[in-house]
Image 1 (cartoon, rainbow, N blue to C red):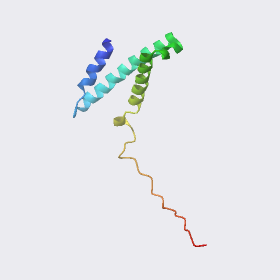
Image 2 (cartoon, rainbow, N blue to C red):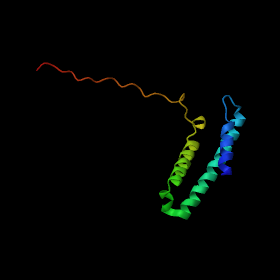
Image 3 (cartoon, rainbow, N blue to C red):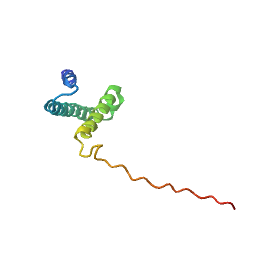
Image 4 (tube, rainbow, N blue to C red):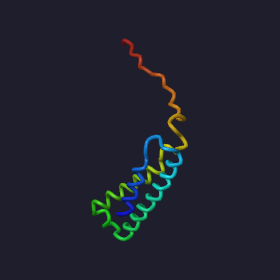
Length: 102
């Protein structure tokens, strides 16, 4: 419970126009929390096996952990390819069928 409260406290520190150093520190702290929650999930999965998925709170925790991992991996501010670098596909000419009188 203490880890959850600490995680909420660090998330509440984030604000608009924050310094880059604070953003980096919060990112690393968030990564540590994700690792702790992932470890908890793995330990419960090993201990409970398939019974783990029969309890709704465990399923919720599992989904939150998976989404957190994906969010951390796909963090848009750290992606190599940003939206400004992406190029739209070239427009394809319209090929209309010509219908003639038969």
